[in-house]
Image (tube, rainbow, N blue to C red; front, side, top):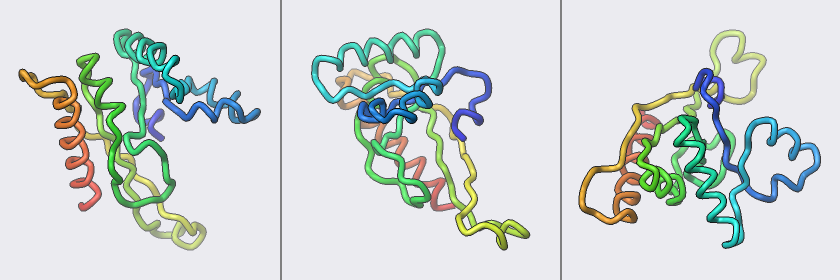
Length: 155
């Protein structure tokens, strides 16, 4: 849904390194331009360089700031710092995307047992231009994005 909502821009998806060890899944996620999030320290620099190359070429890197996708979960959980650190480091905005659930209506209500999903794309949010250190800028950006996303869930 995220890929479809972003039109023709190339999107790279971050995913657990372990996903690349599952035979069928490995092939699928490579087709979808997945990038493994390294678990070891030695690959973190390569990962950061890859993210930098992608965003500097005008493409999008998709992160789950909660560090995991929980299908049909209806709240915004706590965020990790990864996406926000990369946004500050590369001076690019965060584009918050909320997957908002709603009850199906009409005939769909009779044939569907799960909720429908609406993709809500918010305005891009840049880290503040200030004399704060990068860690504090990332923290402030993380809090700002979290609040905006929670506000959408409450509507």
